[in-house]
Length: 262
Image 1 (cartoon, helix red, strand yellow):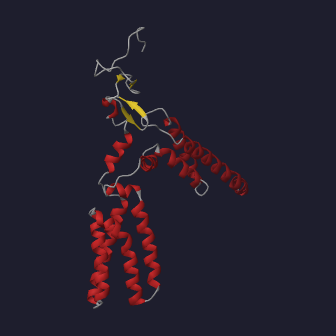
Image 2 (cartoon, rainbow, N blue to C red):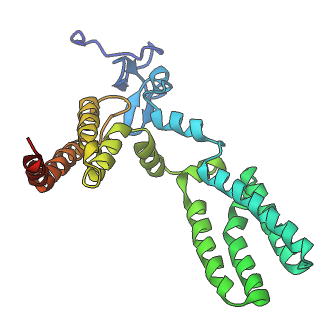
């Protein structure tokens, strides 16, 4: 847009105020009051609310308060713990029944999204492991430690934190978005490319997936579509794995066919 000489650009919404910049999406002039920065890019107020512009916020709201895989696994595990409580009661092992009941309460609260249960889940394996070791021997400490490590990983998981409505940084949110949303076809192509070295029939599939993913790559789109290197790697691995199998087994197949009676 070319402005007339001597004419100062004015804000589209506030004509009496000089513009301090232009929206990177629609090109409209904006003043300081109307300027909205989204991930380091200047937009007007209307464009900043569009889901393709503020795609990380749209992604966050989509997952906010929704159960993730870990919540469902804890919920299923809680049912198993409740079965253990019933077994312990039938056998008259009241101390163990109380320990398992406490673990079941924490697991149920975790599944329901109670904030206190997120921290309690980390310490529950420690308490259960120490109590189990006191009653049945130190071997249960190993199981308690392994469950503690698993619970700690769940506690730190970005997706699970969104389920509990815990704020996460833009960097963590971008990493999760990149893993789940950003050109998943490229990731599938890479996985299939590696699998080709075990199952060569998947080689052509890896190549097709990689070509489709590569065509989608557009770093200037909103949201940006990347992972071109994964698409290329999937193609190369798919071709390489197929060629390797042909070189290894091609002569064997040829010799077998030559020995067949005419």
